[in-house]
Length: 435
Image 1 (cartoon, rainbow, N blue to C red):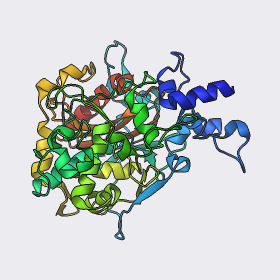
Image 2: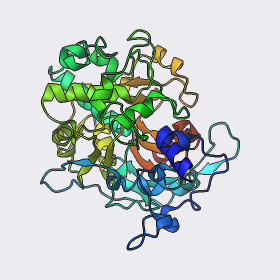
Image 3: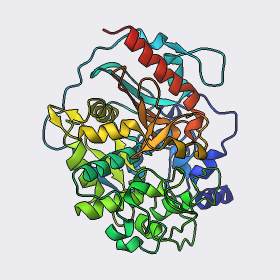
């Protein structure tokens, strides 16, 4: 047992998770409330989750962790400000659960209601023209709770960087080293800000969750997001790790998804604004949208926020962000994000740069300012995070879907087949059956 725990700490819980056996417990069998993780006064030893031994990030335990991430490390607050929450009118519909679709690569039909458990959904909110038409929670996530957003975090900072560009405060063609001299000798030094924003950097950095030696694990260990092995002597913070990244190829080529770009962009934003990125998020977004709750960030040992995936939010607040994007950057009668920024994101990035990244569930897509753009007939685009986190904006249908999940497998290719066609089917249903 001790040997197994040591292996988890060394290889990281995410890498172990990627090797989960094919026979997975169902959503009902892995329900964290039913299994009783961390319940009791105190919990019995077999129900305790810990960061140090990696148990907090194993499946099915992670189904509890994702809704309680604050208990496993230091965090900083993202204030919603002192004002009252903005209204989200309710017009809930009973017909949506029966909307049917065919999952990618399959022939049997599935309903919207069935997809909820198929994707290990912890909570979902659907807005249609600004009204809540569907809201459901499972496990231990509640409307008043917060959930780990994973890489949806990136889209917030891609948007903020694009706003700074629109304001003339950030030159997208500036070299990173001009703004953050500490990165001069790293792979990021001669990359442009735009190349960071669109993830078209040439880096020696693997995001292969199945490889315990991939650089992504070194990155999150440096930030102390996941446990460090005994005797760890590597970088002690996210920013220290950024300085160790080396080039592999040239910048400006094919799209290559690498979380480390987001932390580098976060450092750029921090240097340009002179403020921690959590404070920037609060001032630019969170306090402007009438959020119901504060959000919070996982931070490293010196308080640097994990701009690549450390944001935790309430589900309805995530939906409010998507609704602002759907409304061309407007919310509560104000232009929070310039319309030109939203238009640029919707138009997408260089589609010729995307296929080399080999996303079989995303044919024809592109990537722009840390958003994934479908280029489908509805002009849909989305923010995505591992284990099924999703913010899907469909301008034509007037629909926003905010979903938090705890899928046992990290890569979204495992839930895309029962997510993307479900979103499309729901959008078509709402278009054909407006109320």
